[in-house]
Image (cartoon, rainbow, N blue to C red; front, side, top):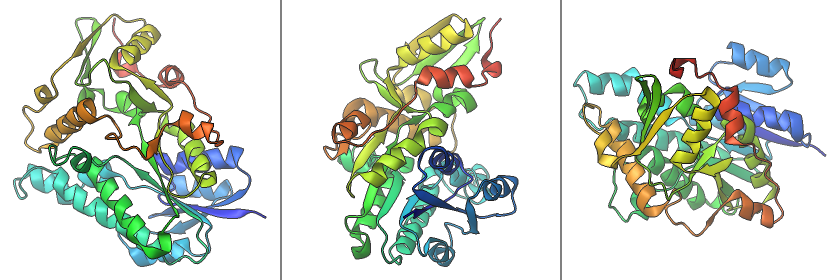
Length: 335
């Protein structure tokens, strides 16, 4: 008998990736996807592919309750960067109408969206699993040393809230998403990757002794979600296609582009200048946290994909070099 999986925010990058993977590899599940605009091109395409598309907004708990009724499983995520860039937040901070740091306001909105998802899921009789796209708690695991990792902390606050709800006890599993490989393509300057004097330069504030968990969101998110649906509730796994330190990633990129490059480890606080929004400080604190405590904060309950496979739950993963090869790097081409 088939089951029903609802993907919250089905037209976003994580949601679309999960739907595509399940359509290709997991016929057990029928698919329902939520979107704020069912008439968008992306939503219409999903409908044509066989997905049941329904209108729902993470800011509207009643719409979520309606969208989740009758489901067996839920995959849900929120998008901090999308919230951050809204006129109500970034626009007001840039205009001096709200004081920085900008992340504190996005934190509040994202936490409420996550709580809305949790409250809606808690009304579903027979729900088997809620998979939450999460991140480690920077403030929690650093014991208050780093207090501005808002885009990490918001998801940890939501995870704790989900687990506090009696109807969701034992049903919440978490996918701690690794560093999005897409971000290096789409906003390289934010992460210190530039070109100058005919070569690439990458100034990266992560120690060479630390291997970053990179994830190919399009190819691998669905595999992790499927494994978490099969594994016991309460499982937490880092979503990593591959672990690479900065120099390893940079060599793959330079080799692919046929470019010379200079890789430099820089202090985390070197990236915070000339930023009236406070977001660079947020990134710097996350880098410092990872350097000191690790990507998962040292949480013993969080496992790797290899450890999940040792428990009998397969997680097929791609190689980051394949993501590099299929991406458009024309904006970083060097003569």
